[in-house]
Length: 133
Ligand SMILES: Nc1ncnc2c1ncn2[C@@H]1O[C@H](COP(=O)(O)OP(=O)(O)OP(=O)(O)O)[C@@H](O)[C@H]1O
Ligand SMILES: [Mg+2]
Image (cartoon, rainbow, N blue to C red):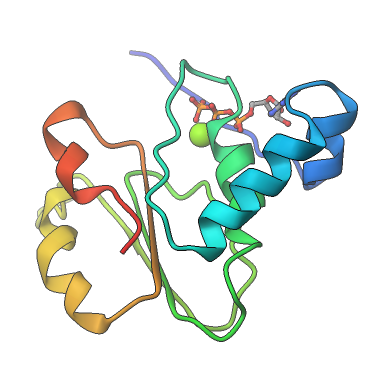
């Protein structure tokens, strides 16, 4: 049996932290902010622990406050401090309760008209439903 513990940092990393530690420069940070404001699709990928969730949480802050944000995750990780947030988390079958796999959330939920959709931890065949809308 393997037990995995995922412990989340209580300190939220900001874009300035990423610039300070050399992950990106101000120009790229501005470019990414523009892409979010222009509602471009952004795919963040990388190995385990490479900072995907951290970057996604930072970019989400650039989404205008008045829009509804839809988050679909296999495991709740993203920090989205917004009142107009609609959040879904996949779950495996548990004690006879039906599973709710990631894929079940994709199509019907786009009907709730979000201005941005963020998803996390999808596998390759799900790639086509993982973009900002
Ligand atoms: N650019 C960065 N420079 C240094 N440390 C970072 C950077 N981005 C994130 N971290 C730190 O690295 C750790 C892992 O970050 P994060 O959880 O965002 O990675 P992840 O790619 O989402 O991981 P996982 O694949 O497990 O979901 C955290 O402690 C985070 O604070
Ligand atoms: Mg992550």
